[in-house]
Image (cartoon, rainbow, N blue to C red; front, side, top):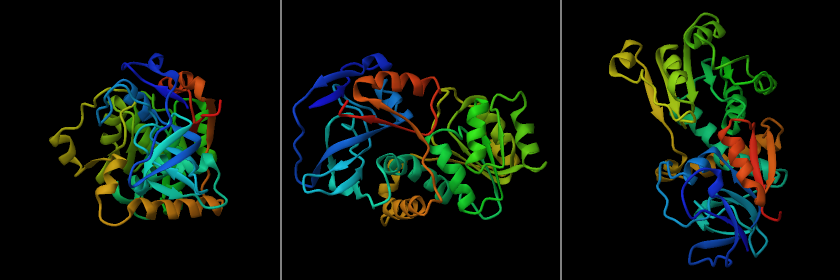
Length: 318
């Protein structure tokens, strides 16, 4: 089968198209004929071995797939790795049936980005009706969904940030009340002004550095900021006890893998709600582009350069 294999860590140049033997499922596993593989910013960290979980060489990247099992089930699944290929083996417990009315891009948009936005809002910042939400990187895979879900969950005001006028316009189309450039010289003041002169209640943050520092300083008493990434690879300076105590601020980190350690089927609950919203036309997955498997280097270059919006996928047949 055709697959992308990494034999040394690094940037997009380490993604090599190769022919590999078909994977064989073991006990408790499913073979999936991959129709689309999801492309995520986290994959760029995995390629350079800077992700939260370390990886051993060689490996096939790709943590999410949608396709069919040999017995005809259409599933979206989290293989952990191996998704950039024509076939992938996944644990049975990490595969969920895709309902009619949800296409491949939407299914992949829900399994990581949609579930991440759901967990961030429901469990990390515990959004209450009427509260304000700042969504950084609002034109990205998680951001585009978080903007919509925040409104769906009763947010009083959604403040988006995005790096270009086109991305800010997209955030507004998706329901944000206001969209800002995160490079504002005084982002703290801009966030407070965008919230009608009041400090903000919650922040979803995946940038790091100055954006984090300014967002923390814009939080209201008992405000909550949840990290789900560090795209700038720059550490913030304001994450200090005195800074947090000055406004009774809470900081959370969210790595989606941890929800599988919680009691009950949290992912199943999230996907049931998300798929229902998609079918009802109340949640839109922004299709950010489809790449041939042979062109995933360019996809990683685009991700790292922040040139993308919405959900990116790869077609293993090309």
